Image (tube, rainbow over all chains, first blue to last red; front, side, top):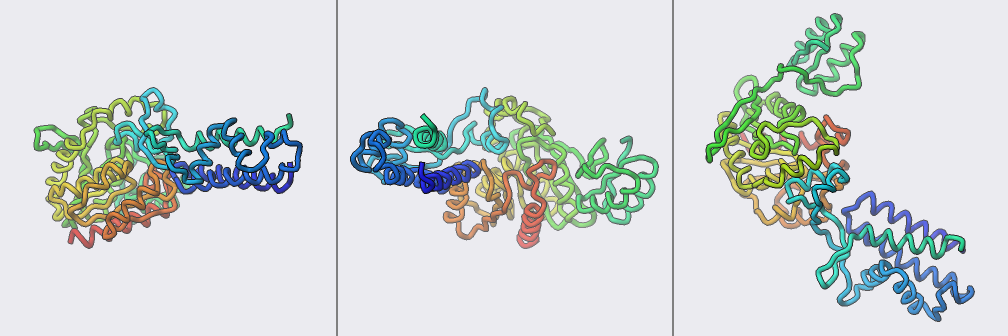
Length: 155
Length: 283
């Protein structure tokens, strides 16, 4: 993998770490998402002259993105978020219910705040138009894991 | 440790340390501002410097009293009385650990600052007499179950009773931390005979942002609070531009000196602001 791509991926990792340190910051989450999105373009640029299999036989960057989206839905969410796609996800902060049996795993901050807010904690989510939500850090984590495995691990 | 005292002045602190430390007895200085004095004096006596607060036994500065609320509930409270004429009254609202050591020490601190201070046990209706020094996750589930029946309307009755008691000191301000911070905002909306409010890191901002305060209020939050989104604090600032909303480079619970999250510089700055705010509005 090219040195340039290594550097780009390191930037994404750094942004993700920063977002996880401030888990309720939708701005930091968005930055990590944007850098992930950008990395995919960078990856295609770096690999387009490689054997076609390296870019999933995609002829252009849009086709490449489609291939990535098909293989990892979390990337699709990130692409749609960054494109502000109509009907696409938005990053929002929502109160998420926590079952009592999961209380022992909460941070003390989440625990304290949840007690007087109907056993809910604040979470940044990908909010869909149909009302469904996915935890933003889980989406980012899945996307990172996929990219790491696909482009940086020896097969 | 077999005995301890609570001297309230530097002179009394020096005397106590000189008398008791050589006898192998621990000595605690109140208010907290005298701790360093006590520890410095006691150094030769071998007192453990790792402890920032020692409160053992019944020799606290305040007293535990019961108040009766408007609906007839007998409410535990902790009351601190200043030396001399009070500058005013302060109602101090607990976190989610009851009237524990740190909350009682905060009441004592306000009393030292000249305020008649009352801390109502706002979890009494959930478990009478609940107090805990256990900040660990091993009992999160128990407290979580307890708080399921928390009713903000009943809490306001408890606060109202405390305000009436604190009014013996003059105009009354309210302050509180976390749970107490959010309740401070709610109390400021309800009025309850209060003259000012200063709330600390009250979580669940969306649940109180629509409750416009009817009295002067200021709020304090940590920039690094992982329980309260900064976006929500920003929304509060924009919604009420006349309300000072202060941010500190600290996490949730930064005023609690009994916990590792304590940020001394931020706590001192915030506490000074609250005292100045109360001095302005309770005079």
